[in-house]
Length: 79
Image 1 (spheres, helix red, strand yellow):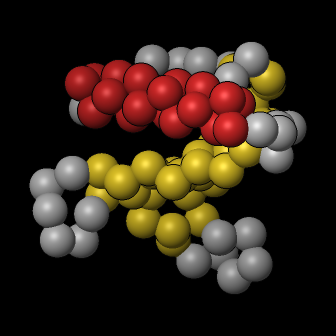
Image 2 (cartoon, rainbow, N blue to C red):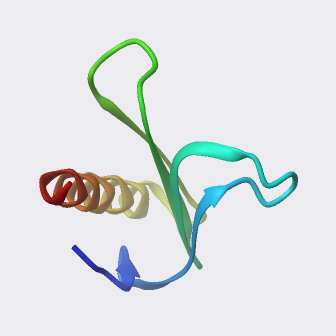
C-alpha cells in the first residue's frame, strides 16, 4: 500500500533510521505536519506496536492511530 497522506495531511517524512545518529530504529516512523506514528515489532510477542502523537487534539490522535493500523496491516499483508 502506498499512501501520501496521514490523517488528511501530506506525509512529510518516513524514517527507518534515527536522524541524530543514523541508528536503525527497528521499525518505521511516518510524520505529517499534525503528528506522527511509529510502528515496530514487539521484542517479546508476535505483534507490532504502534506509537502515535497528535499536535492537535484527541480526535486527531484517534484518526492517526486508526490510519496507522490500516497502513501497517496493509504493509504486512503485502510482505
